[in-house]
Amino acid sequence: MYGRARRIALLKKSIIAVVSILSIFIIARVVIGLLLTKENNVDFYYLKKYLVDKGFTCESMKTSGSVCKYSSEKVKERFVRYENGFDYIYNNKSYVVELYHINGVDKILFNTGDDAFANYKNLNYSCTYKENILNEIDKCVLVDDNDVVLDNEAYIGIINKKIYEVNMIVEASKYDKEDLLNKYEWNKK
Image 1 (tube, one colour):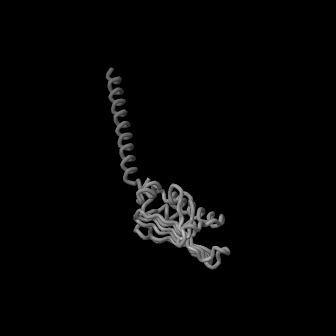
Image 2 (tube, helix red, strand yellow):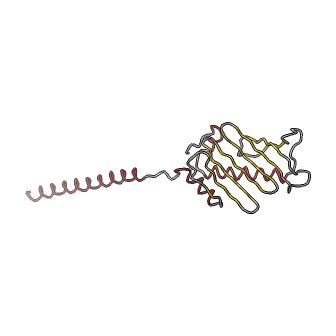
């Protein structure tokens, strides 16, 4: 009987020791996990990474007015992140597309240059869009004459392609697109 009581006492101590060790391990793991959990999207990390992967050179995207640029012999592109929106410009010898979405003001501008198609040279258009600035254009009219509508399907396709590209930039940023479009705020998802 004396041996049996010692075995039971030893078993109780063993169970208490195992439970204590497991508890300490679990608590330590949770605490370390909380301390080491790091926000991956610090200073617009994903936005910058996406643009750099596309060939842009970028400043730190932390401050309002931070710029990412792409430049080649024929094309210049710029994406500027503001605290309350963005401005994107695509420029080549034939045309310039600008998507401006800052502090309650939305504009899509399309300007043609000397190398544009015949009858479309050196014209400035202002475009309206369907639903939101990152969806697609509704129509573009001359800035000087609202009765003249851009009817060149190639140019309309180019503008929609640039809208799609900016949409992809915003999606890649992993910020809330709806807040950016509706509230003009870069809020994390």
